[in-house]
Length: 115
Length: 106
Image 1: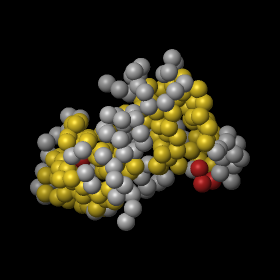
Image 2: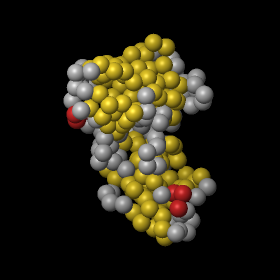
Image 3: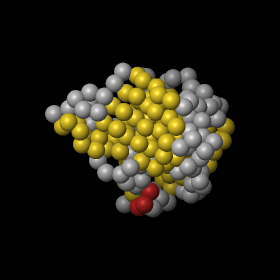
Image 4: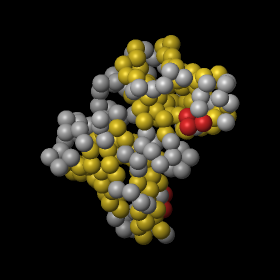
């Protein structure tokens, strides 16, 4: 596989469920990101990991918990979500560190629906 | 808070015409600027990056940056139906605009 892959592509969960989103990058990049994309809203940066260290957490509710076990994998653990958390969650990677200025490479996204 | 504004509403252009998209940003210290294209149901992909004042051309696409006025624009020449998509303006990796939908009419 190449690029940035995300699983699952679609997820429906109840408010009491616990689930995880997975992201894997095959590009040898040094930084990985989680973004949230809701209808009619700009992309929102949630978390940034640079060389497996979290460098940014944009006031995201604690019901979202990221994990970066190595430079190629990124997870977003979900628990007790709310219906307003329904959105497309995009993973991205970049070659340079999170403080760099290069482009982002996005995965295809995980479409989350919270009932 | 860093903000990026894109003029609202879909932009309809005839095939072969020029599509013009504009974006303004609030953080005067921003150094990197990007235009991403997002097809419906797909993820964003980079079209152009620009870091210094002036124009940057790549094929049918031209990005223009004016740091003094805090705006960045994208021109699409000879628009094709395959250009129909939403175009996202991004300032660094932190701030994205809501996007502009472009519809190219054959």
